[in-house]
Amino acid sequence: MKKEMGKFYFVFAVVIILVLASGVFAQSVGLSGKTKEIVDKIVEDQGISKDKIKSVEKVDFDKLPSQVDLKNIDSTNLAVYEVDYGGEAPVFVVTASKELLEIEASDKIYKRMLLTYGIKGDISETTFLNTGTGVESSIEKGYVMMRSGSVTGISTNLDSLSGNGEVEVILYVNGVPSGFGNTLNVDSVGVKKDYDTQSIGVIKFDKGDVISTQLIVKGEVLVKNVINLVEITTE
Image 1 (cartoon, rainbow, N blue to C red):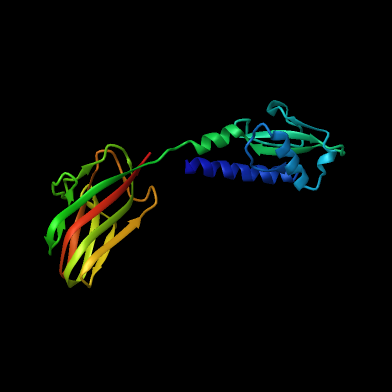
Image 2: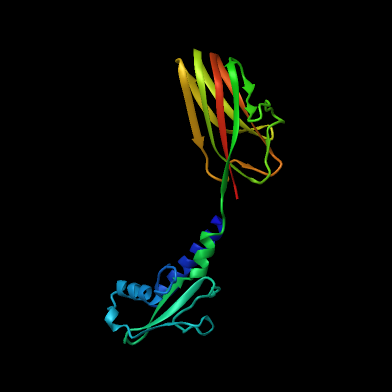
């Protein structure tokens, strides 16, 4: 979607440069039953009184006037309106078509899911966390992805019992550390928590990939009852 949107705005910027040089006003707006009101407003913003407007007629893309040069653009991208306000030459208003904007808005739908990990009891050394089924994950064992997508978040909650050090929760994709995880300082007794989010498309996975998490203990520390969530986003 982003790629297509970028292409649209680049083309539209070129259109604006071309049409403004010919005295044509351009604005990206969606079309509706109030098209004339929209066009009137655009024209008024350019210093032409609404009272002077005699007519607003949609222009046929196959019969564009010489003042409007829109190369490589058709009615699926833009709509052109000719405004007669009694001047020596008409004004042309260029708008983004309603169809284009509706397609852009509904092109992709993202879904999010939470993968649950955790471990009960006291922990003083590095270990992989258990899945929600109670089975310990590993470099090779974990949740198998059924669709391609991205990891977009991770959170961890645990009890700190004693010691002074640090605990990390590292996320693995197919046994390879992703560089994404949580870091919790263990410097006092009590509940510790951390969470981090990531943009879509940064930490990608394909269907069939395995996601697992590992608790890394640094220093002489003792923790217990680790609760971990991994958020994944798919189209």
